[in-house]
Length: 351
Image 1 (cartoon, rainbow, N blue to C red):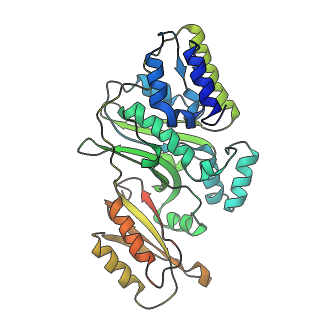
Image 2 (tube, rainbow, N blue to C red; image 1 turned 90 degrees about the vertical axis):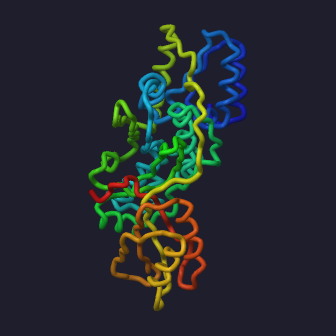
Image 3 (cartoon, rainbow, N blue to C red; image 1 turned 90 degrees about the horizontal axis):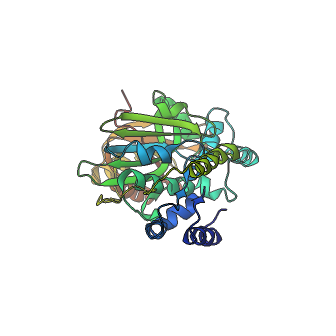
């Protein structure tokens, strides 16, 4: 059962009456996790709440986060956690399909939610990322605090520039701990190099990489969308209940880790323009004003005036500074529409 109203009544009612619950409803968990956790703390230990299917379909990432990293220190989680958008991006990049063609095919195969906005807008991935952040860092973050951008603004040109740079584009959920021990997070299209393990994860397949002090790099790959992978995780949870397996802390303990709504990254910017003299100079001046260093500028030959655009890759910089740059550039007379931006996943993307 989906949604956060009737589904909540059913879940709360079952738990209150001492009935264990197995659910795949990530929206409900993300929205009401603290309330569910409080309710569970008042119940007898035999009443279980299991939700493996809520994040990444058939990949056993929930169980792993509950048991395999409890003595470790997770520095970074990043991954492809929405099968529908990964299927679409693969179709747009590899198969050269249009956005509408890719979405239509994803819907026909059952990869898209009933409201595809939840997928293509990044909101489904954000709900999953929030749940993973609680498991990894012991923190409860309001979903609206996590920066969220989907794939609707991507164009054929962005894939062309990504190819020029030696990589591709994936919609990723990313959570990272900084040097001060605080955690930042976002959902966004990201540039990843062809050498990156995530770049070759195509179709509806999901993948999550966890970087930690003890295990270093752990990568989980599997089917993250579709009825059978989801049903498989639900059945596994039901069997675990039947076997009498106990999980007293389904969300892991809480911590004092703080969330910060800012992060550092290399960024890719795409600017559509009306041709005039001095464009690159003005962009350079805006970047200088906000302390943003330009690494490189890319431009394909312009075949049609309406496709006039160039791309900039910055050096590593604060997300907040990029937003200021974009606001100032958008106000310039030659800028056509809202500039597009996306993070570059790795600091060592050139190596």
